[in-house]
Length: 231
Length: 231
DNA sequence: TAGATTGTTAATCGATTAACAATC
DNA sequence: TAGATTGTTAATCGATTAACAATC
Image (cartoon, rainbow over all chains, first blue to last red; front, side, top):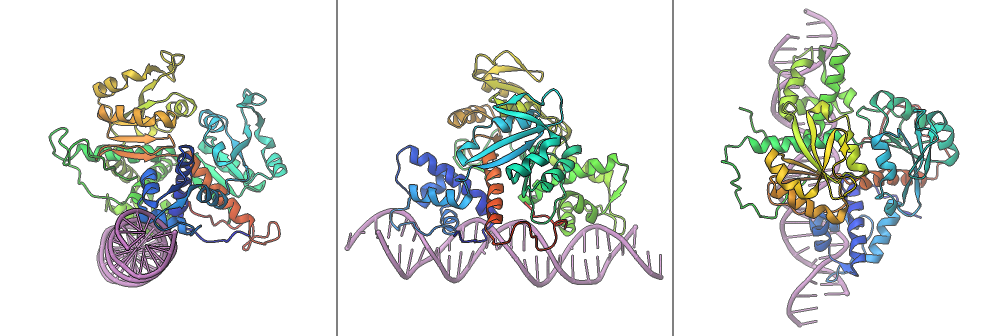
């Protein structure tokens, strides 16, 4: 029986990164990894790594580090990466198609099992092996397959409708790429992934750099210093 | 001369959302909006909205709210949405193509000006109006055009190389979709956008809901309650 | 043993939320 | 004026960082 520890959100979001690094380290033949090394490879502080990992496992060995195999297993268990979680996607446009074809999900045990759209030209065609179904079948199919994750890549104006259909069909988590706020019942998680937000923060950084009166490229610590600004 | 206020990162990331909502409200003919309304429409607390906005403007009128036109202008200025910022993208695969064709950037004054790839079959072809150029031209072209934002959608194994080229060519901000940590000199901002991380947090939420011993769909506050779990 | 690294507590830092006098 | 809503300060909350005894 899994313990239902409540875990800080920032910690939760670092977990998949740790997992990714562990997979890599295993591939290159490492057996143990220290919090310092894991921290370096994932871009986080070593104290933070230890703190994060202790939420789910206290099996690290002083002087040695963490056994990669075991830690990876713990993480996979904790994050639910074992159970080939299915998701349904609505909106087979450019972004939707890219997500369906994204190879990175498989490694985490995720699969976009069904794809829906309203476009007659898309319906019936195959998208990376999945048939595109009419959106009108979305509710019924999600319910029958017991799919709990909905991915929304439809235009903003249609997003709330689609969201409602998915939630009614039993979805408990919505990954929303439409630039609009979705209303959902209690207990349903919405994760907004507005790409413009990401780009905006970059543009802001650029703008900030332009302003200071430093003559062209005169860095304060030399241009090859290796510190980075954390996102 | 713009004030160089240092602004909390969470605040910065809410700004584009405010902006989006303001655009919408202007379209539907509103002139003023209260922090409460703006908060509701963007999904944040009203106190937080006021606090955020006061970082850049204290022009709200007690009893009335914020003048939408003016506030939007402030935000656009602050975020640098006016200057048609150009970005360069490397990796014209599925995800890269989707980004190039993403209509949402335009509204914020962003443009993916140039696209690079190593694939002979893609080079020379047009991608939503931009010619795909050989990656070997990336450095030279970015430098010549003075492009400061690089978008990386190449496979993880090639990401660091591409990043190095972009930084050498003068990039000051990197939007990294490759699941790997990038090393950059001081002063360069890297924003990681690992899609698998997003999906993982959703899967975790699902898993958490499955565990509690509640018989099927018995919510504690009724299934149509409108509270949401914040992401 | 000596050196390295853990798990955990305490100290610091930063962000959110609450509250309210000022003001339209 | 009465009602609404701001800007801002203080209180709360939560996460990160530092430090170190315990332990491999």
